[in-house]
Structure formats: structure tokens, C-alpha cells
Image (cartoon, rainbow over the protein chains, first blue to last red):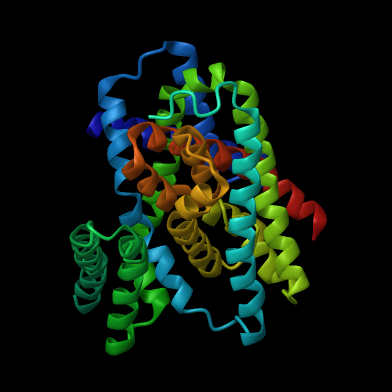
Length: 118
Length: 234
């Protein structure tokens, strides 16, 4: 668990360093993710158990980690009231349209539609 | 001394709010529609906001005390490489439908959000904050920070998008006659990220696996491309 966490933090640090040095507009942890993915792909097919465990633990408790960030939604002094309609409209309509369109597209593209859906 | 104590209390507040919200979420298991509304990321922030308003503590103070969580968000982002690696054999086998749907869905999510917001009178700051709405929160926050969006707005928009997708998604798919849990999972992961993925794991484990695949791929794709596009456009 600790070994897995250390590995993840290490890749995060490398990602941050790459972004800092190259001045890319990409978040450092994303570079870390790409690098970890590449490392896993290149070193073998099996994920080490200690790393898989840590990874699932982190993803499982993701909600706890972004709770403080989400609280920020209720403290936005600089949003004027006329911006709420575009924000809410984009979230509802945009999300439903995207889900319907992508679902329909993938449904058409699947080689064995509904073949073994359970 | 007092400030150390305040910092620790504000840090513990996050844990307590999450514990209460998570217990409530678990307890509502029998009613999926209500449960989605009671997601820990809906109830938790409401609880914290209530306490902060009652005690008169500013959000920036609370945020500072909870900075370890902001760092861990980045660590969790790195961890997304793991399910991506473990599910990679699916990508090989279903490369064409998965990649086509990913490219279409991820760009359609950004374009439709920006188009609708623009039509309804959104200003450029709103548009920039909305753009990463379908990406999982840690990545979305990183993007918002990079391109000058409002982080608080982005965080809220992402969570709300996830809740909408998780509640209305299954309904929408049954209306469209789509029953393949690989499609439901993958599209939910593209559009409704972590919140949707939690829901997808309730449908079936394969649905959840495809959802985390969609979440990871959308996150990586959007994070790698969107910042360049926004900087170029605005």
C-alpha cells in the first residue's frame, strides 16, 4: 500500500517536473498518468498486486478527495446571476445530448450488438 | 496554537462530512434514483458549506487547511493509469467502436456544452469553466487552473454533470433501446466520469470496467488536447 502510494507520488512528481520544465498547458498529474501507463505497458501485462491495490483504493475514495474542491461551488462571489441559465442549460442539455448521440453511435459500431450483454 | 487547532478541525470537518454523507448514501441503497441524488459529493459539500456559514470561517481558509486533499487529487489522477492498463485488452479487441465513440463523445461533450452556454448568453469565463465538464474532477480542476477558468465553478459543474448522467443515463439508454452493458458503461464513463462509474458498477462489473475505461480515456484525451485549444481560441 505504502509502496504503491510512493510509486504514484513519484510519477506525479515527474509529471509536475516535466510540465514545469517544458511550460506545457497540461496538468502535471496527467503527464504522470501517461508515463505510468506507458511504463506498465512496456514492462509486462500483469499489474503488480501492491500497485493494483493502491490504485483501486485511491479511485474508490476519489469522492472524499474532491469534497473540498466541490464545496467551492457554494462560494463563488464572482458569478453573476445571468450566468446561471447558460451553466445549468449546458449541463442538462449538453450531457443528455452527448449521452444519447454517443450511445447511439457506439451501438451502431459494435461488432456483436447485444450479443453477450450479461 | 489556535490556528493549528483550527486547521486540524477544518481538516477533520471534511472527513466528518464525508462520513455522514457516505453513510446516508449507503442507507439509501434500496432506491437508486434517490441514492444518486444523495451522492456523497452532493451532500458532503452542502454539510461543509453549512458549517462554514454557521461558524463564519471563509472558504479560502477551509481550502488552505484541506490542501492535502488537493494534492491527493493529482495522485488519484496518476492512479487512473492502472484500470486503463488492466482493461487495455478490451481496447485492442474493440478498438474501432471504442476509439470512434471516445473521439466523438469527448468532443461532442465540450462542443455541445459551449454551444448551449453561448446561445444562452454565457460569457467567456463561464465557457472556459464549462469546457472540461465531462472530465473526471481532478483532471478538470487541473485544466481549469491551467486555462484560467473558475476552479470552484468547474468542480461544481463536473459533479453536477456526473449526477445528471448517473440518474438520467440508464433511463435514457432504455428509451433508446440500448441494453448492451459495455455501451452503457463506456458512454457513462465518457459523459459522467466518477459519479457515473460508481453507478455503472451497480449495473454490472463489466459495465463498471467499461465505465472506468471511458473515464480514463476521456480524461487523458481532454487533458492533453483541451488546454491547447482553449489557449488558441481565447
